Image 1 (cartoon, protein in one colour):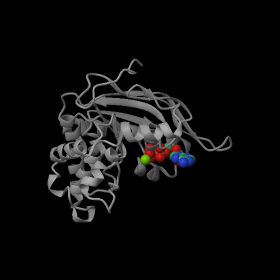
Image 2 (cartoon, protein in one colour):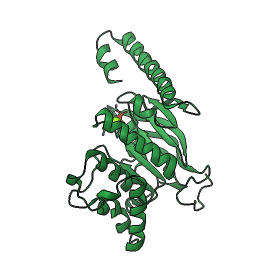
Image 3 (spheres, protein in one colour):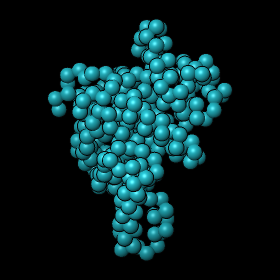
Image 4 (cartoon, helix red, strand yellow):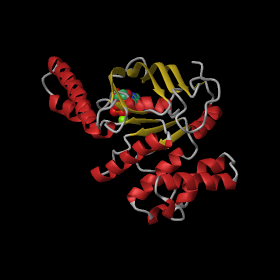
Length: 284
Ligand SMILES: Nc1ncnc2c1ncn2[C@@H]1O[C@H](COP(=O)(O)OP(=O)(O)O)[C@@H](O)[C@H]1O
Ligand SMILES: [Mg+2]
């Protein structure tokens, strides 16, 4: 890792590594009943990439995202974001790191009901003591890019679902984070709203230079990414790149890997026990 040098802010920092994960392990429980939720995961996310993380239910996706987002602490391994190793950081440093280097897209948007859209988007900058003039300029810039200029003075209950999504997206990107993290962002949405959100993420990636890591079990959602990593039983299993393929071609390839993965999972179950196969495959 040579990325300790300050990287250019914003637009596609040429081939810098936004995230490096090395031999990441996370175990839950005590000696008697131990779960290796992550079992030696290594990968990089380059600046400007939109990476999807897929895997069956229970494969370790949320654990991985929570470790990278510093919500959870990995058992061992390295997580380097923008050249900073976060594994050794103390609590106060982590809070600052999370605020300044990461952006989050939550499943339920998590907008504060008592704040306007402007205030919601501006919050992380306000905490950082950015000057009011700079805050206005930046908030207006991202709001314009995401098409929510008209709702900046509205409260969440006065906005449509789609507007709330885009305000939440604006909030995630406003501080120019090294990495935007999303765990099953379309999980609670109907298919139309899901598509709008995914198109927003794609736009943030392609036109606003956002680096995004999105966890999903949904092939359609994953097809908006430029690369998809598959994890299974806490291990990296495969990865595919979209390259020049269309989104629907990429979707087909993702579906193939997913069905291969769940087919394998089913075979494993069948050899151990004939019962419960339907349940296992249904969750995959
Ligand atoms: N807090 C926890 N305590 C114990 N086991 C956990 C905890 N969180 C997750 N696990 C286990 O770790 C594994 C991976 O879980 P998770 O990362 O949530 O999977 P995914 O998001 O892919 O569905 C599962 O076997 C799950 O039961
Ligand atoms: Mg999960």
